Every structure is written in C-alpha cells, then in structure tokens.
Image (cartoon, rainbow, N blue to C red):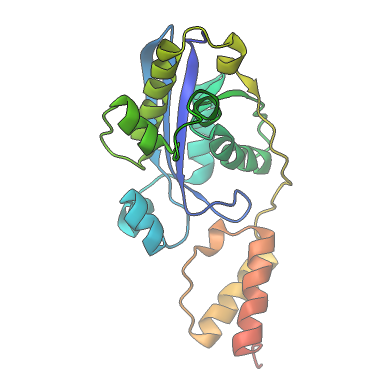
Length: 237
C-alpha cells in the first residue's frame, strides 16, 4: 500500500480548467501514513463567485477577494508537492486545473495519482452514488466542512485508508498511483494593447465588469472585447 503521498483537493469557479479558475487549494502531505504538513489557501480568481458556487462551497466574493494570487498559490503548491504522487477523489479534475496553470507559468508538473473514485467504483459496484460525501457517509468518516478543499483532501485520505483496510485482498495495482494525463495549451496573458482598449471600452460605455482585467488571458480578453462591441458598439472618436 502506498503510504506516502499528497492528498489534494481544489475548489473552483466551474468545471473547465481552460475557462474557470481555482478558488481554494487544500493539500495534505502524508508520510508513512501520518500527516506531516498541510497547505491550505484561498485563491483570488479575479472574477465574481457565482451564487451556485457560493452555495456549494460557502466561499463568498469577499473571502475570494482576500485570497492570494493564482500564480503564487500554484507555485507554492508545486513546491509543497515535490516529487510525491497525488491522491484525491476524481484526482484528474484537480490535477487538470493545476496543470493548466503550471503550463501557463512554464513550470513542469508531471504527476502520478491515486483516484479514490476509481477505487470505489471497483470495490463498491452496489452503491448508487460514489461521491466523496456518499462514501464518507458509508464509512462514517467525519467531514468538518464538505466542499472545502482542506476538509475534502483529508476525507479522501481517510477514504483511501478505509477502503484499503476493508479490502486487503484486492489487487495491489488498484491502490497504486497511475500516470495522470491532461493535455492543455498555454494561455497567454492579456496584451497591453488589449488591456488599454478594454479599459477604454469599459469607461466609454460605463460598464461594470465582473472580472479583473489583469487576470484575463489573451483569448478571454478578445471574447469580452468582441461581446462589448457587439452589444454596445465601438468607441466613437
């Protein structure tokens, strides 16, 4: 059984690593089955937190605005993880968001991972729902704050240990880290020209954007500029 790894969970503004942002990071360094260190931080996504995300996570706009910059948060996470494999419930989801950001930052981040969701699908075919919350209920794992990153990372760690103990005769391969693969293209930051023109459009048309201009990628800025021009028109000199 692998007993040294990083249990990881992210809260995000949506489901797309290319279009959405990280809201919160929770990571637990487990060494020989014992928690050695934790890394937990809110991340400022540079955009408004949708009501459905706030209702799910409890993370408000004010909380998110107090979070640290995405680049700084991701760099710290990469350093925290080191060479250890990752563990999480549907770990490819969390990995994909980190991977997209590391590609943007030109930081190597190639990982193996253990997916407690995949393990549960094999060991619990009888269960209708295999969400982290459902499985924690089954194993009576106490969750301090469901849908908060650090709490869910700890829950995934506990779930992994419970399933390993309940099914000791299962193939070791089931609990072995597998290579995580997520292919993404680098997203360039908004250009100075785009930034200047977008700020001029916003000022000219008296528009309140729900996203920080500085946080936009080049493609996002293009889409917003096109949308504003289509809806409000160009700047008349």
